[in-house]
Length: 165
Image (cartoon, rainbow, N blue to C red; front, top):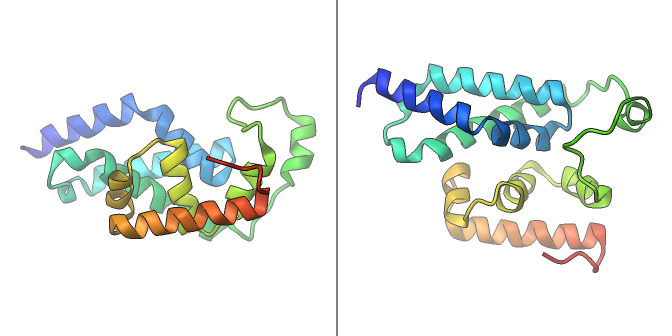
């Protein structure tokens, strides 16, 4: 497969799944503009490193890995910067479509360490199979199962026993 063919397939994949990519980035940063920046940076990184994509069947996991790493890097770089509290903003801004209805669950997920948060998001919000999550996160399937179990246990403790998946 030529570089041009790969480029066209990646471009098509990105365009067809743009809402999913935005939603994944948004689940990390909870800010429209930052999520769009993350998606844009991820696309740039993917196109720049297209030669590293050896097997086109792994396109989804390859791009998800880039997107997740870019999201985590963004959070690390900007974690000390807080322009305005979200609660203050929500009073002045109209409701966003992306907001989850269960704020306790959202807050509990946001409090998880990145390695757990990524698993929860990929499994329950992106509906990926455990094998796909293992490929995206570059971990063993058993490690993914164990960490997912630990993440769910932490969420149950945080949200309460009424929380069941």
